[in-house]
Length: 314
Image (cartoon, rainbow, N blue to C red; front, side, top):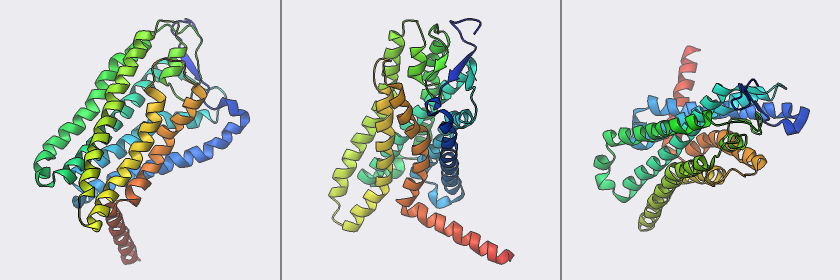
């Protein structure tokens, strides 16, 4: 480093504690990444290609699947390549870019989850007004705000990191440029930044979680008043997959980022970060399709058409 206050590059320790055994992690992580990419791509293509899925519910689902792909692309390919090399470095600019996109996309995914909860709330609790309250204009605005707000707010956040004094070395004990390891390298006063980060976590994570929680509170009370057992089961099956994603996503993210201060256990954070960046994107396509009868029916129809086409070509 020519200047200790502004390193030209950072060293990502990743899973160096495993020594030579870290190469064995490459296969499982690569498989999870590819399955996550393919599964979410299938959902996006299915939603776009089938007119019966051109509804607000699946519009938000397509947005969420796209975000799952993009979030994994910001961190996982780099992590995979670092598992195979001994010199795990990332340029200072590359680190700031990764930081910006990872947290912008992650924040957007939580806002989209709250949009999905609002959609189910209106559909189940106010079905007669659904077409008016969840018109395409409203859905586009909700999704647009969910994408725009985090990307705008993260600009001053990443700029503040770019102008910190990094005098505690350039070694990041993580597999990507996460917030806490970066702050731990700084000798600047980061108390104001930590407060800003905490407020951003409250604004994007906890606020969207609160919207989701309230929405499902009303949904549950409404569904329990449905006299038909079949009707209750259908309503709960529609919302069940969303609730599973909400639990996995929010629990891990709240543990990681909705805590003031930078004296966190980095090794534990590294393990939990794998859940948000690898495991959740891998599980979400299966959760969303296995518990959704409409998507299952569409996928079965597509498979039958492909089989028919294959037979015709033979």
